Amino acid sequence: MRIDILTILPRLLDGPFNDSILKRAIDKGLVEVFIHDIRTYSKNKHKKVDDYAFGGGAGMVMQIQPIADCIDFLKQSNDYDEIIYMTPDGKQLNQRMANQLSLGGNLMIICGHYKGIDERLREKYITKEISIGDYVLSGGELAAAVLSDSIIRLIPGVLNDETSALTDSFQDDLLAPPVYTRPAEYDGMKVPEVLLSGNFKKIEEWRYEQALERTKKRRPDLLEKK
Image (cartoon, rainbow, N blue to C red):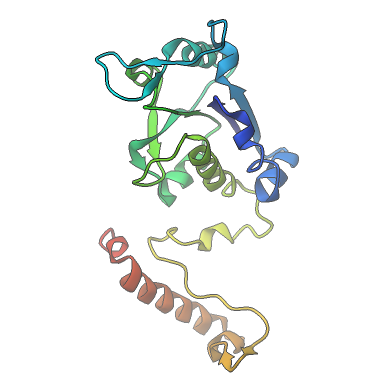
């Protein structure tokens, strides 16, 4: 898989892709991640990428030219399954969406700033608009990192335990059950006996019951999808 991220603040993305699981995925050659500075495509002598909104009002708007030129340049040598714009008014990211995107080949992610990008870019280039929640960030970089993480960890070979991602919350529209590790007793609090029994059938039944109960209490809306 190849992921190209377009941004005006490339250093914001140094951390997420240079440590932990994402870095291991890149080092293994399971995914390529390229960060592109939109400002380098600006034809303005000061590398300006924003301007006032037509019609007035507060806030600036990201201009067409630098982003369009960057997209066109990348499309000359790559075919993209999706060109994604991170925006609060996009479809909210969920596990099903991450699963679907992880099956693709090449993705492009555009990070917005200010009041967003010129609407004509959305009309001409964007194939999918994604939000990570009903709130507003200073820019799309952190959202792009969240999206990338949710996708990359699903690629076969990225996680040491191939089954780990399959038991994450939301994979089956249930929250994950409680988990425990050593010691079996701490400060008078004991691990449920069933988890120490070695009876894997009973353990799986317990985990399902716990997941169902937790979902009923915390996210009953998930059960409405079933």
